Length: 434
Image (cartoon, rainbow, N blue to C red; front, side):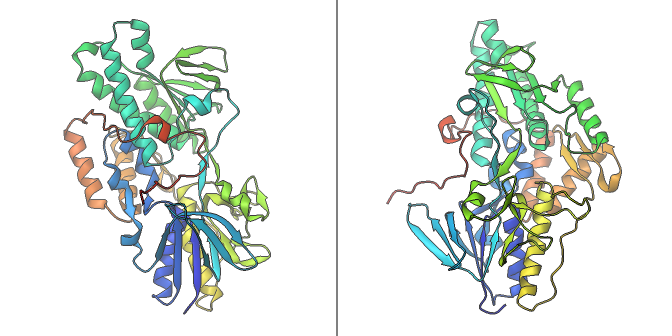
């Protein structure tokens, strides 16, 4: 791999682990470049804990230069790829254009919010894809409770204490769980809200919570959420979003100042710009993660339609678990393309899933064993600590402190609503003053 020029587009789970494995396999001989709009890898599974006030955002952000010292980081957004000249064009934080040449290219651009043609969604809903959204949502939830205390209008108070989450998958379920714990803790600390409680609604067109997971996990999550007073509206979605509420598909109008959109994701639009075959927006690749007809181009993670050899005819799901393993395998196959080892097909059997339900509760099924309560919480916490590339001690310390100390309900005012529009396809770089 001496002198090999390897370019990776995207520093999420897939791109980060590809870069880290390549830097070890190449032993410093390969020229590895990572193009990413931020200088950190975001450990997305713990992001709901940032919204819930349990973790500082720096705990879930891993510095790319620190974690990947042998990798050149280009802070920018990749814009296009010239497959003939083998060049990737990008734009840096100050709007300046540049390009980089490659011998091997890894497309790990990830995914963005999936929007549906529902009136008012783009104007009144907020997604949950990064630190800005998590910080905005924490401030917003805190603000709504504080404003509910200030008003004497019972209808306004009810609306401000009503929160709607659309999408009962991983993200929606965990965001709701941590959001509810946060709002309840704020309400208990407010004398003017004595006797009040927050009302959280979880909507999904599926017939159960966590529809993509084992039914036992779904049942555990369903039972716990209902015991906390969460209103589950299954086989239901919204038909219109307004500033003061939402209209549901069953015709019901729900007064609320909060709409959180977690219906899923779609591949980053950058994939479409490549001009290569796609499958439902994902880059078509073979079982070795290479693009047919372009053996020098690899596709991994949410951006790629990787064949699932354990389920013939299907593609792997858009999960962090698959992205991480595909990143590592792509690194090995790239090394093999230069004569170091042999390439392997991607084949992965799930070892189980964990769902963080906040407040010391969780659902998990390691090795197919269904767990709930403290056992599931222990497995979930342990898994995250093992999967985190860095910051493990600080995260564990924050959890320990959070178990005994109340969460601090303060608005930081760092992110306003205009900075996190739902329709944004790609996280833009901050503008720097010249």
